[in-house]
Length: 424
Image 1 (cartoon, rainbow, N blue to C red):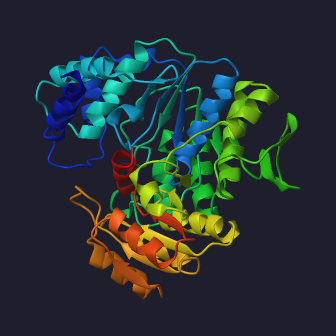
Image 2 (cartoon, helix red, strand yellow; image 1 turned 135 degrees about the vertical axis):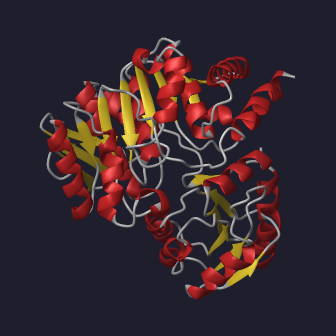
């Protein structure tokens, strides 16, 4: 009975606003005030925005802080298999009873007023964090930054902006500068901001916002550097040099995410052992995650099966880089995407790496691109593409043709979540 209670409340919350996205903060302030303004009682907050790398960077910071003996709250979105994944209380995923209690309280305090699902559930997370002792709170922005529901903390301990690229234009603006301006909206007066690698247009905007707020920047290429030398991650800043193992999260892009995490950890004063733990012990599902058990693995046989939820052009480039450097196996993609994404931009860098793509519709997702549309978009990028009714069918067809294949299920966190639920 308890297992379904939070789902029932979450379903109710979906009906409180006709839109999924409606970027204003007025409703957040109203509900937080009704709840007694719990955002003022959070453990020191580290607020993370950016287009790509937010989740991985957060995971590394959490691993480092926990290795230093700190207890850490963490908020992330969207979830993959269960909503509980979004709220980690002092290192542990929120349990069903605690989640049900804060959801119930927020629903009652809202009094039937209009509020989006993300806003009211973010209030629930903040309420849970404020009532549970911890040393730090990691808040990952949902969308943008300036008007995101997480942007309600007046004086965080630190802000972080990971690489900014073009995504969610319908909400954030058409140009990189406009989007960077939205991300930079998390910068607060006099609060230091860690900045990952940025295009020049984006960095100019971030610097302007920081200057207006008197916020010190700790920027890649200026105040810290990171790279790979002799198969090791080498990080340097004014405190000196770190010579560490490569990140356990795969991909060259994770070196830059690790750099931002290390810059944050060094600013917070952790030791070298904690910094090493940040890059070697972080776990972030559906980011080039190799699957090793479950019904899909039974179908895969001797084929490798991987999962990634990246969904924009920058993610496509990062995945292509990982595939290009891996062991020589023929690569096949099983891809499903939302109709709000730049599918051509995502698939373009992957075209050179894949033998073929099998397109699927995302189960239960109203905004899925139909499989036939995804398949045609892949053909438009020069790929051999087919349609399949679901992931299992696509995988069976691939391994029947090539038992030695490397198969990547990709294109959407919603597809990744469905795979993790069904393959458990």
